[in-house]
Length: 386
Image (cartoon, rainbow, N blue to C red; front, side):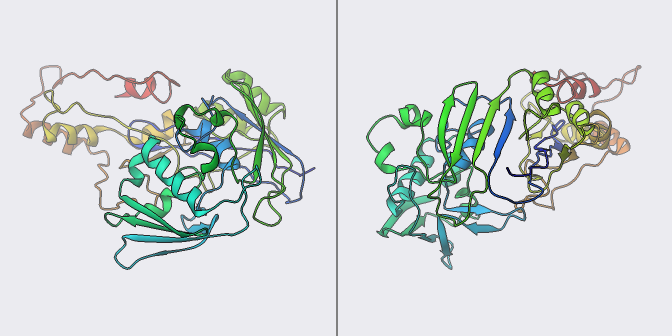
């Protein structure tokens, strides 16, 4: 059996547009072959085809069942996967992939350039994040192991778009039969070329995957089996982690739960490799309604929000302040974006400039804050603080 240090993939939740969560990976203390990894999850996937479905529920099993052209390391550097090499033209408008020649789908048929072309076109036409492939104009397949992607304009994130969670390579001989791909029966019994093969999918209950003995990367995977137990009751899920019935928890919604599991002997929590993929919560403004139609008012609110208080007090220190929709640990973060650190004097000056004078009780105006139902610390508590 593999010796697993029971480490949970626990994510903090972000608060109000300004905090990012810290989802977390689990690693074996010693790398030895064999064993079963049991993952606890509250996420219920509709199906298991991440080419047409976004979200953690589909991505967690999907990235094991399917391989992608590229994968990324924890420092955001692209790594070979199905594509053993790639080249971007000087003008940034052509990407050429050279595929490995030993990759097979779980039904034994080879992975070819036609499958890669079909998959990218499928994602572009059907995925909720389809705009990530919007600049893709045409795709050429001069031979079985060469893919030439022609772009209408340079696309800085094109390589990232071909990573594991975003661009699974699906078999054309299965999905290219003319059926509606979003409702294709193979979505619940997928055939990929990834390290694990699906052996059981009990909708809303359990997903079981076994080691792919024909995986194209020598010596991988190490595990014999991965079992994803879907536990909808939050307390039951925590108990499963505490009792050792599960080895890993991919994402956790609340800091209270994280703090609870921090006390469990043998359970470790880390954000290594996942610091840039957590959700961001934000405060959105209705800019067509007064007084939020004035830039000065929106800026004043930003200066009045103490993000450090939210992250340290309300979120118990398991989230980080953010200043843009792209987290600061992302390679695409723009550090020239203003931080709007708390500054009440500046906030008051901006409100004066906007013509919103304080009344006798000090009130300048009133707003209604709507929030999405969920863990109180993420939504209700932050709304009440505001």
